[in-house]
Image (cartoon, rainbow, N blue to C red; front, side, top):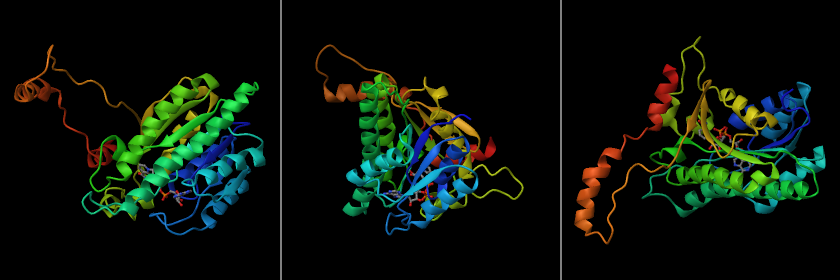
Length: 310
Ligand SMILES: NC(=O)c1ccc[n+]([C@@H]2O[C@H](COP(=O)([O-])OP(=O)(O)OC[C@H]3O[C@@H](n4cnc5c(N)ncnc54)[C@H](O)[C@@H]3O)[C@@H](O)[C@H]2O)c1
């Protein structure tokens, strides 16, 4: 099997996309730490059952897994997630940073705690787990134990394209895509790759937390269920494997059997002058020469519609 002998952590694996990733990683031979705090979609509360149930499902299907209920936003808790893999299964190969919450609000209404909570889970949580995993992989590499570490961060179209009502979530998701690029560059010499995915799937985050997307995600009975969260997992399984060793710092959108290679900031044109610009002259030049480089921006609504038409 593709992941025989591998040990994986999936954060936020009690529900939604993470649950499907944990199940498929296990099906392909990985032993899995199923981490999940078990709270509401806004990050409040806690419940051990979602993680436990996924572990039971994996075991019932003949795989091996352990539940972990740490909060990824807690730096020391994240270290305990990594340690859980090492203590239970002897090592760690694959880290899937998936845990997430939403607290949508327009920028002018957003409360400080709504910003902090979302940044803490997505951005700091991804940093926390990645930092401890990378320390471990570097130490192991130094003593000759090359573990082919794999980091898979979970970004979002909200971070790559921008989305109304998510001035906290979008920047956090852009950050985790960039973090994959940075971590990959830093960790290549230790045999580690880091990449990011931007999933499109029907979960409580796209149904309960954002009712405006719920209707788009309905599919007619008998039709291929493009928004089933299970469609995200095959890419994650492959990115976690040794076969994906040449994939470095990439960002993929994934959903409904479609994988898009996403490409980010790049130079779209220049205006230049040897010397200081007069601001008005600069403005005229930008409007005349760079406006043509301004392309129509893709929106998340267009992505959803396009996916239904593939
Ligand atoms: N559903 C989509 O279309 C979509 C699109 C883009 C990105 N994402 C991202 O995919 C990831 C999975 O989300 P989902 O849609 O499956 O939602 P979900 O709510 O079904 O799953 C998220 C899981 O993360 C857990 N979690 C939340 N905070 C945690 C914390 N601090 N520590 C540990 N676990 C925690 C939750 O308990 C939950 O089980 C998230 O990062 C989300 O932002 C989803």
